[in-house]
Image (cartoon, rainbow, N blue to C red; front, top):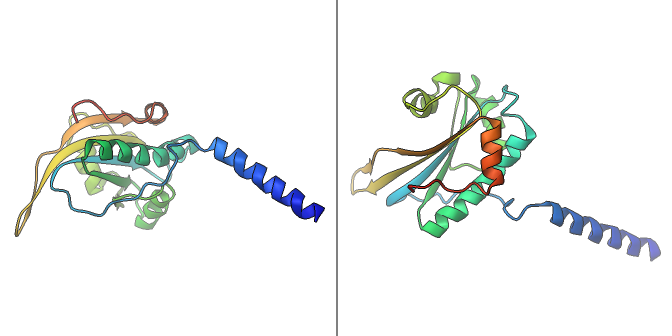
Length: 181
């Protein structure tokens, strides 16, 4: 009996301590899987399995925390959010495994290294694009579903956080949604 009480006390203390160490914003991101109608915010994370900076535990934690922080802000603005993970790995499965370690995404793109279609669109075709990983990009666009097609307006870049320090510091501040959204 005494041993059972001691075990319960230890478990209760451990649960209390672990709850104190988990930030309020550290919850799981849950994609909505719903076609937007109107303005949408798109967040793109770009990383790579073999990049030490992309594998930095602080970056991984920041990306995991970033998604629910942005989701709460988007919800408060009544604007749908889509979070995309891009892995610049040559091997598709390596990229899938890497992105899976970062939690849920609404969509992913992996394979073909820097020739990945998402890298072409979000890095090489953008004036502010830089061949650096990791990075987080935030865009807004307008989506207009129609009877037989879906119109996607031009994507307007709102922010780009390049490198570990920028990403970690931005998320530490609560991942504030950029002005102009």
